[in-house]
Length: 79
Length: 384
Image (cartoon, rainbow over all chains, first blue to last red; front, side, top):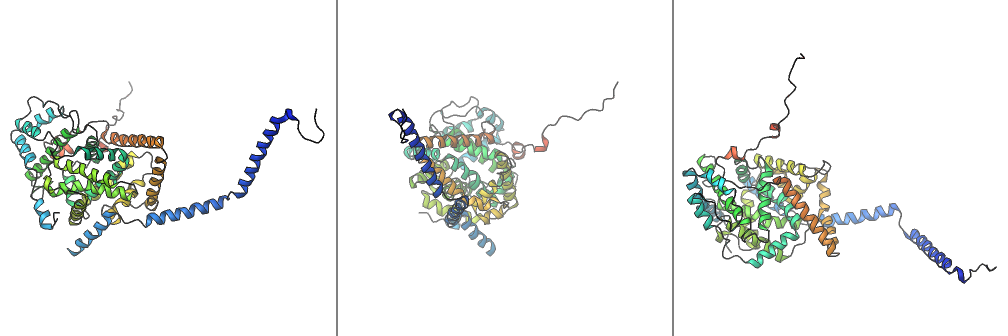
């Protein structure tokens, strides 16, 4: 028999559990959506990381052969 | 440590490879080159009986050079093999995009390669070098059944025959072609300069791995007829020799530019589609630097700046590999597949023979693309 105050009886345990899980997931998604950055922010973040990565690699020493080639070029110029 | 002065290096330019030179001289003077080549086609593995009817000079040479040097340390060779297995794709990439252009940026080496025509068809040279390296890094490379030593024995005679042809035809301005200094220079390109390229690609290698890889090439050098005492004993000495050699000889040449163009075309053919074609020149330019790339007329492309993130991408790949054995296994298998595909596309499934050329051009020349057969046009047959 259904109860008048809106509470489910013991036979509806499974229903209540399922509803609880669904509510939790929905709440989680709402929180995540609130915290998730927009596409513009994602793009900005990636760009910043990319610039840092390029700067890091750009700061890497020159190709060894480049150093030698400049010395050889200077020698060719002298000759 | 030996002081690699100009005087020391100049002395190396006057020396060839007496044992191989004498063998080739004997084969040519008795007209037995053809017989040698025919019989040697079937001699491919260590421990195999020498073919019957082999000229005496060749038989003596093959017996004298059938074993690796007695100072070889098998433990270090095994370390080198593991290093190669771990880095096979990266090492192949460094060999193709850094070591080969390094050969071309030495004008007299570029001229030699052009004169022998072996690089008018660069895939043949690449196939020979690639297969040679793969043979070297097999676990049984030096045991009975291994293919490395016979290949090395044949390559040594091939070099000696080119030396002889160029001298006979008076086409070489110096006393000795493929001299000891150039053989050592080549050894540096395939060893320490490949390690330089790996470093530039951001590949993490251990000091032991680098030492072992260099050690394996020292062994190869001795087997290929370089005087063992002159081979730089460690990476520090190799750096010194390699730098001296390159600064002494680097420069632009029409032959170098021509060979580079062919190398780029070859790899653009191997990479499917055309979208990624500019990656080939971009990678070469990144690895050898702008000055050499300009000498070799490597075209500038839109990938030139993008290629700078290659180390970051390779770093990401390494991170994935470190996640667990399954990721490493997948990556290893993919790597091996890429190397095998690369090699088989170059060799077209053939076993490279390393025969002694009887003459230079006809043996090394390859029909051009325009020589491809096309069906004859329709004949003007009148209707009956």
